[in-house]
Amino acid sequence: MSPASLFAAILVYFALLLAVAWRTSRNATNDSFFIGNKNSHWLLVAFGMVGTTLSGVTFISVPGAVGRDGFGYLQIMLGYVLGYLTVVAVLLPLYYRLQLTSIYHYLDVRLGRRSYQSGAAFFILSRTLGASARLYLVVNILQATLLERLGVPFWATALVILLMILLYTYEGGVKTIVWTDTLQTAGMLTGLVACTVFLLGALDLDVAGALARMDAQGLSRVLTLDVDSPAYFWKQVVAGMFITIAMTGMDQEMMQKNISVRTLAGAQKNMLLLTLILTGVLALFLFLGGLLSLYAPLAGVAARGDQLFPAVVMGHMPALLQLVFFIALVSALFPSADGAITALTASFCIDMLGIARRADLTEAQRVRLRRRVHLGFCALFLALVLVFKWIASASMIGVILKLAGYTYGPLLGLFAFGILTQRKVNDRWVPLVALAGPALCWGIELWQGALFGAYRIGLELLLVNGVLVMGGLFLISRRSGQEARYPLQCCQK
Image (cartoon, rainbow, N blue to C red; front, side, top):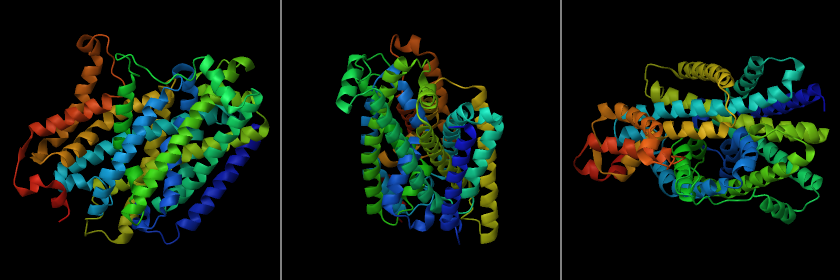
């Protein structure tokens, strides 16, 4: 299919998103933007969150990594399941009990204002870097496979895509993206299934035969039992669990959709259904990656990693599947960016600017302030996408997980200290402790050869970071009276 035809199809798809946004954002307020008026249906939230959780990185990088790592990602997936169950059992009841709009307000109630602002600041840093890295990956693929042939420069592609996202999130926020993410998840999964079916046919294999061929070529290997390896089984499981707890349960973007559901039971059903769907979808992505690795040498495709899937589609699939692929790719792109920009706007307005507490602002002034912040984050995302283009890596999923280890660790330490201990911190020192954790992790990783010999730190960096921050908080804390002994109960008052 010609680049012009593919581009026209993407514009039609975007027009559909705008129609949904117009329908859902009528009479929207700041409450609609931040938490969807707490009226979102749990089933829609669960399905839409699949697209948000997976993003373009999963769509491109997970299949591309199978040739190198086999099905080793299943180790992390097991940890994900344990992490989601922890969020359902521990964090969601806490957030609903406190009736939070920003989940970081818990840190204010439990530890203090500096702790609250530190948690929000690390979320803003984490989500800004992670979401812009995800956005870069998909923009770069759209550029390389489509828009470059139309003579469009990379910066213009990034700018237009961010303007598209801005247009349909500007008014409705969470109220809109609950619906648009549902549409986009459907588009992404359609592309996944269609490409899998095509490759099975092209290889003349059924599912059992494909798995047998993958096993014969070493593509279906799962377990890594070398304790020194970054991919060691238990390291991956534990890291996957805490990645989910931090990047879902302590992430405003993910939780703002959950707490937009009216009841706790609905939010918990949403998370359990998300866990079930996500496990099946990630397994299918790995299967697709195995098929791509089988097909590539037969078709003479030399591309590897993030470039493998697009190369097979553009060079060896029919026009209709190319169209389905691009719609799926755009569907994977938008949920990871629209929700991030909306959540960052909400967190900055509520946590940093105190928009809800300021009696000197009218509702109209609050709306204007929120719109300016939203525009500012769109501009920041554009700048970061251009930076990632300059320092591009072969596999963005590795970059994103590395960033998460450094930036979500302080959140993990702050929440764990608040929930698991009965101590009161010296709040003014908390920002320094939160910064010290990542700094120490950087030093440990830099000198790990001298410290640990052959052992190499992998995804467990997040947990190490969280433990260091929690230990630092313990050093600047003391026991107090009843308030410290019963932190959750005191938060309810």
